[in-house]
Image (cartoon, rainbow, N blue to C red; front, side, top):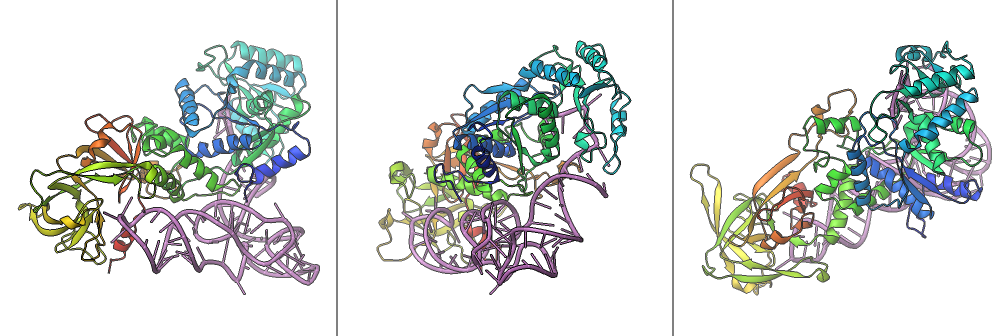
Length: 564
RNA sequence: UGGGGCGUCGUCAAGCGGUAAGACACAGGACUUUGGUUCCUGCAUUCGGAGGUUCGAAUCCUCCCGCCCCAGCCA
């Protein structure tokens, strides 16, 4: 079902919002936020959340803030902040001037903590981390009250102030919410809300030695920004009672409501931040924007159009079921957009020289080729044709299997946009037995026309004039992991790394016009796939292409079945 | 194990008491100067299981089974 006003899908989250609006719960506003922690690059899983949060805001004429949840200085940095901003913009979303940092709220958050202490709802605890764990109990046994739970408000105020002033070493004291050590929900067993951490913060430097915990900072940041609907992933469901509890103690009136949805899982893809960081820092990939990475930066460099990612996020829907989306759907969305927008060009990955014996030595003809077979408005270009050509190596088979339509001994094939040629002979390398050159003849009457005698030519292959084509490098990117959604936690993820995730071809040839093409441009190499000119490594002399995604290939399936 | 969630086609996902949408994938076929695109066709007599309520149940009730999350001074 779709909402015809906006074209946006409806889902259980929108049902909740509709009901809130109807009940007058949010003063008629809808305000969401996307709250990344700047400790890594965002990936396709974040894209789902981004599309959801910004999409809902847009659909309801509301707002979506970008807020950096930077309450733990370790691992956070400005580089990550900048990359996140850049990548969300690239995805096509904008937050106007509503870019916030939880670290900008440190003063307010501190004041809220003091308020909580004054209300007798928080206390300073001297237990160390191990002791706190022991006192917390287990799933089946209730926890024990901390010996410091009964401190007076004055005592707590004093101690908390001294925590802030840096009188105590890291780990020696924490501020805890006084809730219920016997709660069946472990999150509610007097959760830590402030800890001492002497680590410079990338924004606040050394001005703080105490930092609020997520549970304390997040709900209050939402409230400060007057968020109406705080959408997060399922693992925070247990934290919702705490989210509400904190706001209940400190605020009156309208409050943000937390709604949880299932995070994205993608087959053959690891979205664990821990693993992604490791891939980068240990050099398994070239960086966060390595085209094999599931990061937005990686997909961008690979050549995925932002619209395809948005479309993917729309297609997968939003629900609470654990899911494992087939990457084929992502690839489908990429192909769908690129099929519409990518100009067709000739590109030969593994060149095989073909000599047209009956074509005059010095002659050059120009063929006008459509840039898109179904879209004349995309125009045409001219392509030079001469006696010596390159074709794709596997467009010729010495001993072709059944159903093979392309060139083989005794056969004819059409050169796309040009002539029909006929096999005459082959030249082999004496040492290796490899075919190194083909001799063919062309039929002059077939220039952009069917053979006058009515014979049917089934095979159509692409080609390049040897002397006019330019060299190029092509990188065939494949899946980084070879097992569907490997459990990234326990085992070493390197067990799942696909050694063939990158194949670099250095002897490729492409059309001369591609020399002037802009980095980032995407093309379809006919019969092969979609390719993008690499933004980083291309030079004027030698463009580098990354394969965005292969074309659907029926021949692959036929061949697999034995071809008959 | 206590608590919190979730179970509808291979994968997602609609459905909200009136007789199982759609997408991807897959399988056929048509067309094709890309084995691409496009176009047709097929693909859950059944909704984790068993009972019950009802004229009627994926939708309501009961019990059972399975999967995920929580015992960081991470988010």
